[in-house]
Image (cartoon, rainbow, N blue to C red):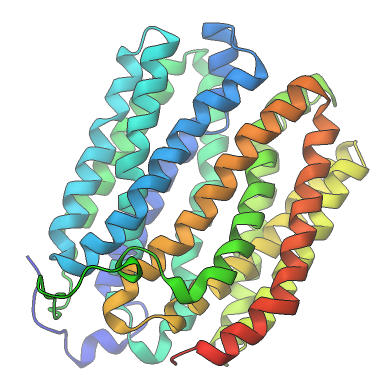
Length: 399
């Protein structure tokens, strides 16, 4: 249950509850990344799916998470966050068993799609809990460090998945492993103690702003564009590397380099965030990412493939915590869940569009066409941020 506001001891950045929430975040994303890089191959080898079908099937998870997140933001702002967190984590955990039982493409599509609902709600609940246990004086810095748990999962999860698959040749081993990891994360989060807070009154008028942070709409559009680029890249990376570049076992290394770039930039960027250079970090990050996406498609060899991984990691490592801070700074204290869900919805919309449109472009034109589309969308998002979003944020920020 939630406990009274913690005392002076919790003013440390790395207090016990922040460590536990970060560990829970690592475990939930580790379980997620155990499946993500190999699911396209699983669908192709098990159900003989084409690239556009793969894109449609995998997009269901993102669409479900997208639909769940606005409501989950409202739930974590309106009800005890610990209860919401536990319910979401349990559902996220138990749905991994469904992959073992899905013997047809249709059943797999249903399980995968419905699984996106607790995932979408859980990421909102857990990130909001992390903000709650951070001292306000170090929140900007703490948000950056919290993301390291996600990045560490991104580095180790795909590598572990590929190692397990190469060792066993069994996708069922991956499904069972993800189930166990998620179960451990559930236990860890169960020990977190959250501060007591004022819940939203049931009598408060229902409005759009309780489900979507309206004032952050321009940032939403920018993040959607960045999500599109990553959706195209991440979901078709393994097949592109194997079929076009002849890289049969480089997906794990790509994600490792990507995560190393993410972690390095988050560590380096924490000092800037502590000094309040949020917009600066966002601008630097998005520009570096744009160079990375361009390198990936313009230089179709090992240097471009792995060099892009590092650059995109460095860029996103600056970009993500900066954008999360901007969304939080645009929201009142009783809209933290809504701010987090709006940010994640933007990413989900972009990822979903990237998977579907990228799949169609790859199937009917070429992989380079799909990846060039990610460069174009990313460039438009960078321009939109510089011209429109920066002055909008300066006018409307609350802190």
